[in-house]
Image (cartoon, rainbow, N blue to C red; front, side, top):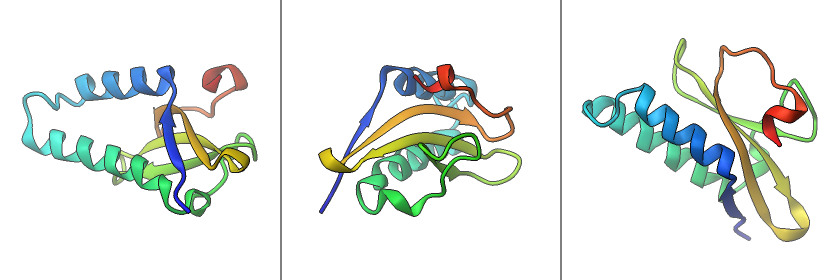
Length: 104
């Protein structure tokens, strides 16, 4: 059964900022990478538990996308009863670990 993938307002803002930071508007390569990341996020509708739990908390999972040193994390939680994936935050993989308030 497919899960519904929802992005929180925070995750939407993170993606919009990422789009600007990588200059996707002026670079075909950056735009293709960005689209691939969004497709990977939406693919969580199938087998969302395939990704590992985050080192910060076992309540969350993270999808890793990209190649070193440009790896990004989509931090999310799976709401099994609702068959829903809630994407909470998008961040660069090299950033320090997050705290509870970072994903709320």
